[in-house]
Image: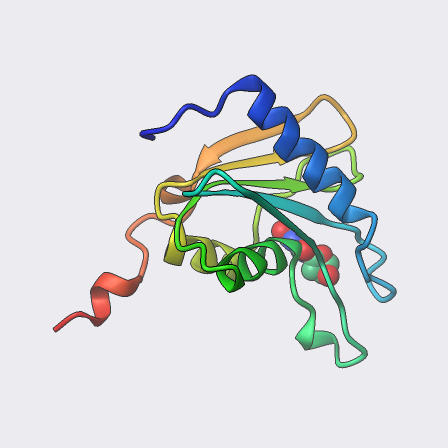
Length: 138
Ligand code: THU
């Protein structure tokens, strides 16, 4: 990683992920998730999981946050934080790992919850040998 994820910056990201979970729309699973991402420009974007009566259309919190960042022109992810109000931390699902890879193949991925437990890793450890933009080049 070529940037410093300082303790105050990490605290801001964690706070944003916790706050985002409050807006979770999860009437079917009742599983609230909030996410906050740090982009190449140094900005933080956040999002929650948004479910649908057609269950398969649920959008995970990570993807909501990443699509929000991308919609603001951001093209690089430095860090993705996931928060769930659970005793165990939640890691991004396979679909979200693929979406993180698009903009942050080396991004830090940090999962926090309501116990002291946390997981800290990187996208390339979660999704080694990923399919990505480079594979579509001739
Ligand atoms: N979910 C997320 O938002 N992020 C994850 O990393 C795992 C799962 C959501 C999708 C669905 O709304 C609910 O959690 C239960 O799977």
